[in-house]
Structures are given as structure tokens and as C-alpha cells.
Length: 511
Image 1: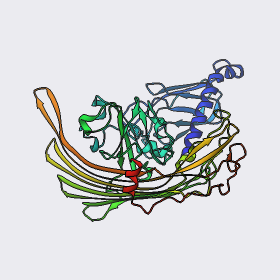
Image 2: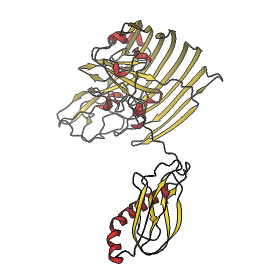
Image 3: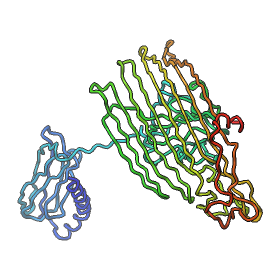
């Protein structure tokens, strides 16, 4: 069908051009009153005019289009037998044999039948909401359209995450957010976004999940639906935060649609990644729903010996108790095995940007950093009455971190240095609860949106960064910046005290 339509438009353009030039050519070939002409009107069965129909004599350059009243006129036609054709969109091709005599003025009127099945249906849609959502998540507590919110809030939707192939919070996501930067070296370990002069707070599903300056573990995008950036104070709706702003990571929830999706990603520097997203029903009545997201990746770096291997598991179950009450439970496990975080820094006596982009000072034999990050959410939503909703939710987070951080103990003027590996073991546990009420009231023409609630939390963090071990030795065992050796360091690899409890070590280290 598309080729027929294309041929039709090409023929129309060609014949329209021919009609523009044909009177002159016909006038040179035929003069006087010996030429014939055909006139007439083309209409539908109900008598309405068919405007823009193409009327032509096959085998000639005689072609015209009907006017707004459906009328046409073909002039200066050489006498003879011709096949008269009528071509119009929405009607079948109409043909009639005509025999023209010298000087004859013939009238040919046509009533065309409708042909609804002549053209296939073409539907053009635009999904503006995929990049510009109309509302915020329930976890931001604002029960109003985004356009009516007086705060500066920017949402990075799931469509943006997919189209830009963003795989983690640290993976250039903030290029979509004006005024947001990252100034720390933590790579894909911690996101740590700075905005309006200070580090903004990290939220997940409405909970402040920051338990120290270093954290939380950056989210893998496999279980993230979208991210909401609030610029400026937001204490009125989220109780605790920071005057500079926050970002709220909203995880994927069951939709009730039976669907599944598998994504495979291959990239530079040995990036191999696979994700699975399953969404569906666990009961025939559609009250019990599930969502399961799995992800695994191996990821190298433009710097040698660096890697970031991960996997995540994120099951979610929701149950619609009745038409007014819904319960949702979700668990997320993120496991990371990655290079010593200090490997992101390099040092040189010759100044800034003097070393190759792929240069590293990491010792490849160092034990990798290992992280296990667990989180559990329970959420209850209940509609008290039309316009009034109660939300109660709780969360538990557990984070275990074991690894090292690489820093120089000395950088010498001759271009040598002594690298030092410091222990970095950390543990965090958070228990949090929230209850809030949303409602609407009207006093005359004035509409009021009411928000009231309570936000409680108990957070504990402890870390040991008080032990260090120089990898290199002075007097011949230094690391040469411009002639690096990546074998076993002169002073060997560290053997830290991990027999003593982390709590006792954290007290000694002051953390």
C-alpha cells in the first residue's frame, strides 16, 4: 500500500508539472477550433463536491485537478479515442472511454463511490509524559500536579534513563539536572551530589538514607523507576534534609501488567551487563502482584587494573486488600566487588594533566573492596475518604563495607612516591518509620491541600580507617611515577587487624 501511495504522489507531481507546460506545447501542435475539450463535475453519492481529484487522459499530458466545487476542464485535446481517469484519495479509481471529435465540447460528470478500505489506518502519537511527567511520586507527599508545585522539582523519568542507557546513579545522570555537580572521587561507590553550595541529601522512596558523608551505595538503575530532584529546602514535605536540596530515588513497583524485559549491554573497557524485569500477577483476581528485577555486570575501566563488578536482586510484592487499602513490600540486595577507591586519584610532580588518561597508581594485587547493601520497605496506603489518604511506611537498611583506600605517604621531587593503603571497613544500620496524611479542603473558592505527618529514624554508623600500610619503601623501593612497576610492591601487601570487632576499631579510629 505504501508503494501505491508513493507512486500516486509522484504521478500527481509529474502531471501537475506537465499541465503547467502542456498548453504551450499543445498550442504549437494544434491551433484553431479543431481541438476538443472535456468539462464536468465530480461529486459523491450525497451530492457533495470532490475537490482536488486528479482528472487525466491516459497517454497524454492532459491532466487537471478539480476545484472546490468539484469541477474540471480539459482543453486543446487532439481528436481521438482516450481513456479518461479519475484519481482521488478515499475513492476507487474510476475510468471511462471517450471518443472526441473535432471542435467537440463534451461533458462528463461522475459520481464516485466511497471506499473506506482504500487506505490503511495510520496513527501518529506522541508520548510527552515519558520525558515530562505530570505528577510526583507518593513518597514526596505532594498530592498535586507538578505544574502547581511552587518548589523547583525536576524529574528524571524511566524513559530518560533507558534512552541514555544510564546504569547507575553515578553514570552521568546529573547531566540532566541543572546546577548539580559531583566533586568527589568516589566513582561508582557513592554518588555524593553537590548543589547550591553543599551536598544534597539522598532519599529512597521518601526516606533519608544518608547515614554518613560517605553513602549510601549508589543505586543500580535496574530497579529504579525514576529520580526526583528537589532544589532548595524541602523540610515541609520530607521532615529532614538539607537546605540545598535532595534527590529521591523511586523504585519500580508492580503495575499489574503481564510483561517481561531482558536487556543486554556491551560497552567499551569490558562492560558486560544483563538485566531482567518481570512484572505480573500472582492471583487471578489481580489483587496480588509482583515485580522482580535482577541485574549483573562486569565492568572495567579506561585505567588498568580497575573494575566494578556488581549484581542486584529486587523483588516487590503488593496486595490490594480492598478498594481503599494497599500493602507493598520490597527487598533490595546490592553486591559490589570493586577496585580500591583511592585508585581514582593519581599524583605527579610535573603538574596537572601531565599523565596519560589511562594511567594508574593502583597495586593490582590489593584485595578488592566488597560491599553488601540490604534494604527492606513496607508501605501501607489507605484512602480514608474521597480526597483524604493515609500512608504509613517503614524501612530497614544494612550496609557492610570491607576494603582499602589508596593514598600517597610521600611524593618526592624526583618523581618517585610511596603509596599507602589504608583500611576502610564500615558498617551502617538504619531503622526508619513514617506516617503522613494528605487531604483537601475548600473554603469558598479557595482550595487547601493539607499535609501532616511524622518521620522517625534511628541510624548507626561505624568505620575503621585508622590502620595503614605503606606499599613501597624509601631508599630504592619507591614507586616511579613515570616508570611504574605493577608487580608486588617492595613492602608487600597489607595484613590489617580484622580480628578485633569493628566497633572497637571504630572507637580507636574516632569513627
